[in-house]
Every structure is written in structure tokens, then in C-alpha cells.
Image (tube, rainbow, N blue to C red; front, side, top):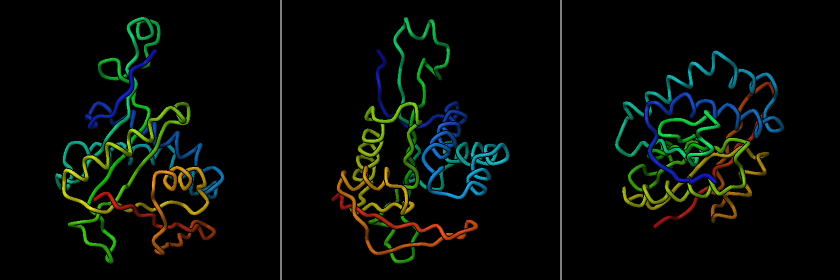
Length: 194
């Protein structure tokens, strides 16, 4: 039996955050993104870059409104004695969420935040980690005075679209087309948290 929770990321979590991101992207985006760009985003050189970026996010975020949260499982004593794959304090990072003031030019960053990342390790999906991360993100953003949250989602990422729609998010008409060897459409979702 493992205890679960969400907390602020620590510097020692950075390798696990990067590993979670890469595993989630490889699993979740394999039918969404072309193979070449996905490999570039998840390969060894990308892993080094993500480690540096997540380290910076933990150690020196641009503002106090930039946060990196992790979902963790804390294994009980018997499991951790036999397991050995936990992190600090026997905690294993199984999900990650990050948020910041919105940067899109049509949004007011004093009232609108952006959910930048919401990922759960593929071996730990459907255990409530995504919901806990989303709820913790909203709690922090409300405390910081934000009224609205947006996020960008690949239009073909049916799992994420379904999850966020069921949590009360909806499209706001904004979209992007990324050139990844073929056009990849993203849509912006929004929710009111006031």
C-alpha cells in the first residue's frame, strides 16, 4: 500500500521529473506527434536539456507565481525495504505539473495563468494523480489571485482533452499549428477558477 500526495518539487526530484516527462511523452504522444520530432524531444540530448530546465524551474523560478509540483507515492516500510526505486524520503515521483502567469498576448497575466505541464507516468495513470495535480495547481493559483487558467493541448490528444473537459475546461477558439514535418494542431483550453 502506498500513500499518495502532491508537493512542491525539490532539486533532488529533477531527474525523476525529467524521466516522468519523457516516459509520459513517449507513451502519450506516440500517436499524436511524428516519430522524428518525438524522438528529438525525448532522446538523450533532450534529456540533458530538460534536466537543466527543470533544475532552473526549481532553483530559480522567474517569479513566485511559477511553480513546479510533483505527485508522489510514498511506499510503506515493507515495500521500500524490498523495492529500492523510491526517491527522497521513500517518495517516488509519478506525475508533474507546472504553471505560470499566462504569456499569450491576448491574455492578462495578472488574472490569467497557464498550466504549462500536466503529466503522469504511464505506469501510474488512472490512480488519481492527474486530478490531485490539477487540484493543487488550482489551489495555488487561487491563492495567488488568478481567476482563469488556460492550457495548450494537442488536438489529437484525446486522453488529455477528455480529462480536462471532464474537469470543466473548454476550448476558447485559440489554436496553433506547429510544423513538425507535418502540421500538428494545438487548441487552447480555459477554465474559470474564481
